[in-house]
Image (tube, rainbow, N blue to C red; front, side, top):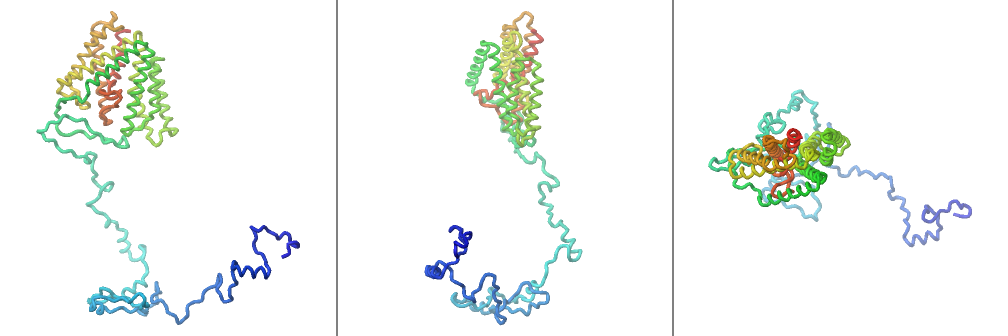
Length: 484
């Protein structure tokens, strides 16, 4: 093709399609064998339909499925080896693999009882499937009756007419009456859903046997108690503001401790919001007094609802999350922040001394008297606490309130009589008892022995200050009534 006459037909080499070449160039290409030769005229090409088999050629022996008009007996079948030949020889000699196929079908393990009726098997090729909606009514009723699938003896789960109760899942053996064992605390079956979590109550002998050992390292406990007392004295000497920093730190640590135990037990409170409220409430009480309580609690409840409204709580239950958060705030922050209210009073540090000394006196008296003389359990919530220990704690708390606290201002004022000091000691002892037992109920419900391990020999922060949480409000109002 002349490129000068048709310049627009010229294309780049990399996009070249069909190009007409001359004879010489074609001959050289054929010699290089890089081009395909022309197919002969009789060669099949794309789209050609192949010829059918000859009419006199072999046909398949069986066609499936047969038409309704076909007779199965007219079908030619390959010959079958007689069973006698197999039985007499004991084995069937197969042709060598190099030999052509004979087309015969051997009948292995044939019996003399009778041969299978091949015509009966051939009837399957002419039968048609029958649907459940077709056929006589009796057959349809049989298909619709599902009673055949039931088994009255093995129904379980939702099909069981008499499902087992919660108490049937656990079985406890009876204790030998000759073997005396101390009453053990209950064990808890913790579930991912707190609403399904349950407590397995101990069974067997309910008699109380005083433990020979409290399980506490007494020397270590005394050392830690001395360190805590020294830290309080150091901050108290620095002034109320520094003592407030210690109060906020203790409340925050106790809140974190309780939040951690709740999450381990399967609850999912808004921990970050609860800790913020626990830190804010004592500072607001120290700044604004009792009027700070409704404001902080209102904001905590509102922001708790918003916490789950915006999805910060994930897939956790909003009701359980907010309820557990408000429980921590009410139990730890509200009760603990009464220490801040006490510090706002005149001689507030002296009033706080009264709360601390009577609480420590109650704990020490109850521990040593109950350990040495206790035989009668006081409550099922805390079986190791006895009436003997309770009496020892009350007596020592009243003695400390009169002998030691009575000489600390403002308890040493002339307006405070001896009866007032005794009354304060009794009130503090009663509040300490309630605080101790209430924490035991909480720990038993959560299935833990101690709230934490921050204080060796004591457990956690809440284990050490559980009684003080109830003594602080009692001391605040007792001071308002008896002194101010």
